[in-house]
Length: 88
Image 1 (tube, rainbow, N blue to C red):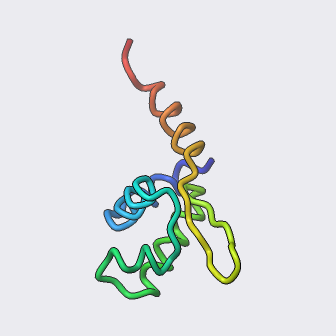
Image 2 (image 1 turned 30 degrees about the horizontal axis):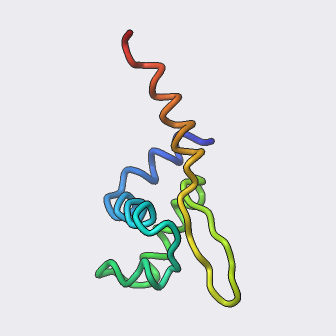
Protein backbone atom coordinates (compact mmCIF):
# COMPACT_ATOMS: atom_id res chain seq x y z
CA UNK A 1 0.00 0.00 0.00
CA UNK A 2 1.40 3.36 -1.03
CA UNK A 3 -0.46 6.05 0.85
CA UNK A 4 0.75 8.90 -1.40
CA UNK A 5 -0.59 7.13 -4.50
CA UNK A 6 -3.88 6.36 -2.73
CA UNK A 7 -4.37 9.97 -1.66
CA UNK A 8 -3.37 11.23 -5.12
CA UNK A 9 -5.92 8.90 -6.72
CA UNK A 10 -8.64 9.97 -4.30
CA UNK A 11 -7.90 13.67 -4.77
CA UNK A 12 -9.73 13.81 -8.09
CA UNK A 13 -13.53 13.94 -8.18
CA UNK A 14 -13.80 11.91 -11.40
CA UNK A 15 -11.81 9.06 -9.85
CA UNK A 16 -13.95 9.20 -6.72
CA UNK A 17 -17.06 9.05 -8.94
CA UNK A 18 -15.62 6.05 -10.80
CA UNK A 19 -15.10 4.29 -7.47
CA UNK A 20 -18.69 5.03 -6.45
CA UNK A 21 -19.99 3.64 -9.76
CA UNK A 22 -17.92 0.49 -9.25
CA UNK A 23 -19.22 0.17 -5.71
CA UNK A 24 -22.81 0.29 -7.01
CA UNK A 25 -22.36 -2.05 -9.97
CA UNK A 26 -19.55 -4.28 -8.64
CA UNK A 27 -17.88 -4.83 -12.02
CA UNK A 28 -17.77 -2.63 -15.12
CA UNK A 29 -15.90 -2.53 -18.41
CA UNK A 30 -14.01 0.60 -19.45
CA UNK A 31 -16.74 1.29 -22.03
CA UNK A 32 -19.46 1.06 -19.39
CA UNK A 33 -17.50 3.42 -17.15
CA UNK A 34 -16.89 5.86 -20.00
CA UNK A 35 -20.61 5.89 -20.84
CA UNK A 36 -21.29 7.31 -17.36
CA UNK A 37 -19.14 10.40 -17.98
CA UNK A 38 -18.89 13.17 -20.54
CA UNK A 39 -15.16 12.54 -21.02
CA UNK A 40 -13.03 11.02 -23.76
CA UNK A 41 -12.05 7.37 -23.63
CA UNK A 42 -8.42 8.45 -23.25
CA UNK A 43 -9.30 10.51 -20.17
CA UNK A 44 -11.20 7.60 -18.62
CA UNK A 45 -8.22 5.32 -19.36
CA UNK A 46 -5.92 7.76 -17.60
CA UNK A 47 -8.14 7.84 -14.51
CA UNK A 48 -8.40 4.04 -14.47
CA UNK A 49 -4.60 3.84 -14.73
CA UNK A 50 -4.16 6.12 -11.70
CA UNK A 51 -6.65 4.03 -9.72
CA UNK A 52 -4.86 0.81 -10.72
CA UNK A 53 -1.44 2.21 -9.75
CA UNK A 54 -2.86 2.99 -6.31
CA UNK A 55 -4.28 -0.56 -6.14
CA UNK A 56 -7.74 0.89 -5.54
CA UNK A 57 -9.14 -1.14 -8.43
CA UNK A 58 -8.12 -4.29 -10.20
CA UNK A 59 -8.93 -5.66 -13.60
CA UNK A 60 -9.99 -9.06 -14.83
CA UNK A 61 -10.12 -10.16 -18.43
CA UNK A 62 -13.00 -12.08 -19.87
CA UNK A 63 -12.72 -12.85 -23.58
CA UNK A 64 -11.97 -9.51 -25.27
CA UNK A 65 -13.19 -7.33 -22.38
CA UNK A 66 -11.47 -5.98 -19.30
CA UNK A 67 -13.62 -5.51 -16.23
CA UNK A 68 -12.75 -3.27 -13.29
CA UNK A 69 -13.62 -3.85 -9.65
CA UNK A 70 -12.85 -2.11 -6.36
CA UNK A 71 -10.04 -3.55 -4.28
CA UNK A 72 -11.64 -3.20 -0.85
CA UNK A 73 -8.60 -4.45 1.06
CA UNK A 74 -6.66 -1.31 0.14
CA UNK A 75 -9.49 0.84 1.50
CA UNK A 76 -9.47 -1.16 4.71
CA UNK A 77 -5.71 -0.69 5.10
CA UNK A 78 -5.98 3.07 4.46
CA UNK A 79 -8.81 3.41 6.99
CA UNK A 80 -6.81 1.48 9.57
CA UNK A 81 -3.89 3.84 9.02
CA UNK A 82 -6.15 6.90 9.34
CA UNK A 83 -7.79 5.55 12.51
CA UNK A 84 -4.53 5.93 14.41
CA UNK A 85 -5.21 9.68 14.46
CA UNK A 86 -8.60 9.30 16.08
CA UNK A 87 -8.67 10.46 19.65
CA UNK A 88 -9.91 7.99 22.23
